[in-house]
Image 1 (tube, rainbow, N blue to C red):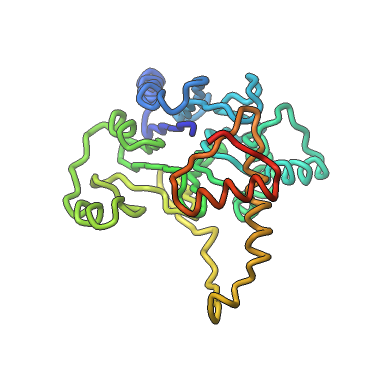
Image 2 (image 1 turned 30 degrees about the horizontal axis):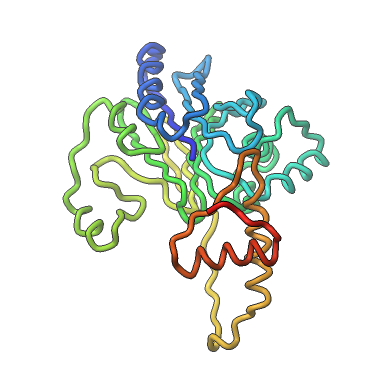
Length: 284
């Protein structure tokens, strides 16, 4: 996956300090984005975004991030599996594209629909988006992609990795001992909590809208409650059709695609369906 980050310094416009912290975010996350590094700073506001790229779609420089369109600037990690469908809808509305990336679809989609874009997306994502007035931090429905942030009196900071975020905070936060039992019980710390006071995770299926005076959080998705009388009543044909369609969407890439085999039932099922229903035999 790619890596993203951002810094918004409040109260003073110290470009040198901001650029230094953005460079730290990029350096500490370089292992997750070996294909390129991008840095963008707003000319009017002391806010900057950074991106380390792992190129999957449109390997050309046209896919570089942070990406700016109109008044929006985006740093994004993830993959939108239905981006081609959304691209067609946006073209019908008069939008034009200069790349073949899902990143540009996200940007123009936000321009067209705002946060109402989010329920339309299929995929996994974490992104920071600046609209000239507020910073939006958004995470996918199940929290597949990580996104950590801290809102301090000095400003707002975010990153894909907790270790990178710690390097740019004005003061190192105190550990949060209460998180340890949760980690030992579940193997992770559920959002919005982390191991540190004052650092949070964006909740899965939520967006945050941050300004120097407000931090608004809102869910854009909640799981449906589905009830089946018994396993025999499960619509197996529908499950198979949905899985097959879902796998087909995930094969779209401009780089070779592979398959991780764990030896369990789930990864074996993926390999079998790809081979027998889609006709694709992936290296595993």
